Length: 399
Length: 149
Image (cartoon, rainbow over all chains, first blue to last red; front, side, top):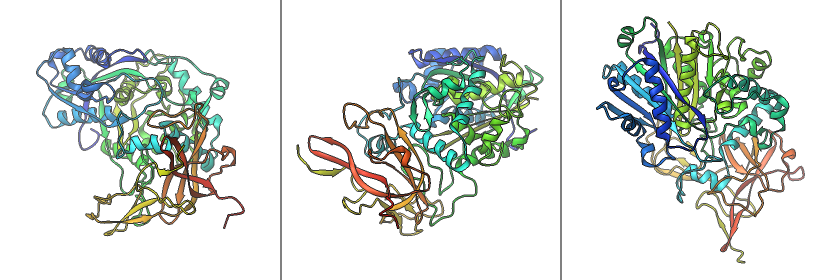
């Protein structure tokens, strides 16, 4: 048995395909939830707790996503919660459901996140808000999300010698997997020349290396181990869920901030925020990066996948491009990264995305990821980071 | 058109045209410096301080990284003209404060001239113009060889 907290079982996973469908986010959430319930062979009326990941661009129902989707499925009297953590909203919902199960407050829970997104860059929500850093960064700097991705990418080039071709090869690698994924928005294998010919958005990053905004939905049915064992001898489990915040002073330049914290008067922590996220999950699980067979990390840009490879402990800082060049993080390599195709193949449906990462790990650990299967996978890790200090990492195991 | 110059945001930087400075705040209890200013509570978990003094930040620093906006950002960004012209954004590391601060780079600075580690200096420059005049903001400008120390 891994970890001190104990494990919860994943009875079912489900998704609504990613795309730009333009329908109500609740439709995607219901679709994903019904798929997860069918996968779990569970009647919706048996669900005792519903945890929804919130979406902030879909009006009131988006802020009460758990209840909005529960009502659409037909109110069944279950307890409900909705959680937000920006890009990590899905993990916030998973953490809430898991804590309810581990505390004995419920036996079986539905986790669901879904989003409908506008076209183009993510912009702050409306109004004149001189006190909101997310509003001010657009006003004073024109600092879109890709600006931050571009800063990280250029830093890698100048510090570690990564090349534009390395970043393009991440997209090529992931698109080969995405082409095999029925839920991906861009099921197409891109060539290197095609990626390098796409227009520059935020130097050195090009359009095909930056995650699009997408519609989509993802859901999990989680249960206590006792509940699961009545149904299956060997459930896939969540061994850890990390939702850590940074430690002051945070020296990681994060969206939507104008500056890092100052490390002049107080010493910077030994681990940067990004490095601390999966570390916390490994400690909970009693496992380490050497135990992982695959990873799903947040490639908001192709270059950011390399940052994550280092942050989740697959290699030392600065060595991720070498892993890429050696084929270690490709399908068939030592530890494939983003065999789902990643955000490059999906685009981001914010409150669904961290849940989708877990869906992929579960399919992989069950051996059901047709066309992109990591052979013999037993353990995997997700990693992600949401605006305003939301760490997100989940360790998933087969038994 | 009026020629009045006014800051894009109040209290974030001095309007000194020659030697502008960003205005942070310093916790009087633990000495932690913040930009933008913290004025109510100190973010240091070991400090319960709530009193701050204004802390003008270093005017020069080293380029930590840089990138561009090849596409026009969405509102509340205000376009400078009808056609978007790409501009650079710099992240500059201040040695004394041990912090990295973002800023636009003046439009006339070519991306190719930027190198991580080069010295950058704070200037005031136009963010956009409206009926009341010029709205100005801080920007990071490369220190030319002639000015270099």
